[in-house]
Image (cartoon, rainbow, N blue to C red; front, side, top):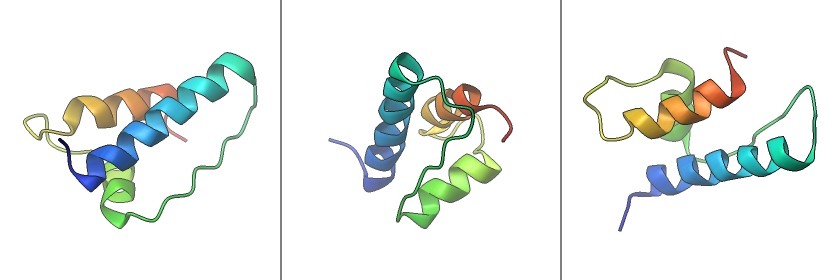
Length: 65
């Protein structure tokens, strides 16, 4: 069981992993509907937050862009 935010973040993470494995694209555009997930990815979250590790995985995968 997990929240909608976690589902969105995991979907982004796994989608980026697939892109990295099969396509060596320079720019990647991710579209999503959940504003809270976007906020976490743009602003990060505190280290004690339950989404911290997952958010950092996604952010580290794409860099500061």
